[in-house]
Length: 178
Image (cartoon, rainbow, N blue to C red):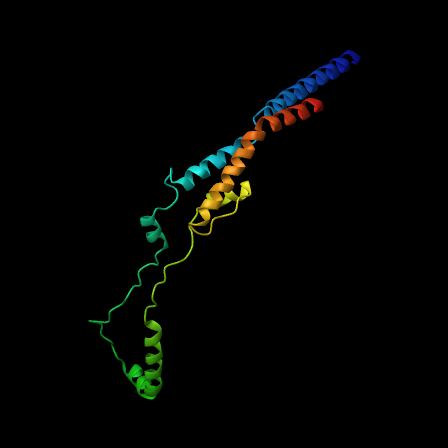
């Protein structure tokens, strides 16, 4: 009985050591990956997007179709007939004066409003999310794109300059923990 118990505990300790060793090697591998890899990738993709190398930003033709208000539907009453019952006729005679005022007010409301061209800059949610992740201000119009591109270039330069140093720091900190 005692021999079984000792074997059990030795086996258990060996499994625990193997588990810790595999966790340590996995963490070391994760720590040795280059720092700022996703940030650099996001910066490069956003720069390509704002320079027009990709087609994710709407062009002038698609902007007008995206931003344009839908066409107002008009209903013509030509050929429509009203079936009048005795009940409706009596109600019309009783409320004859009131009905004209409603129709006059209703006619004013039914006039289509002039469509205004929206003022704004359209960005997809992914682009806005990536800009927010990088700490870059969102462009609100086409003139602000230049400042956004400059901020992205500064961030990209910072990430590339400090990539090796930060990777080494993370690796050393993990080595101390192991």
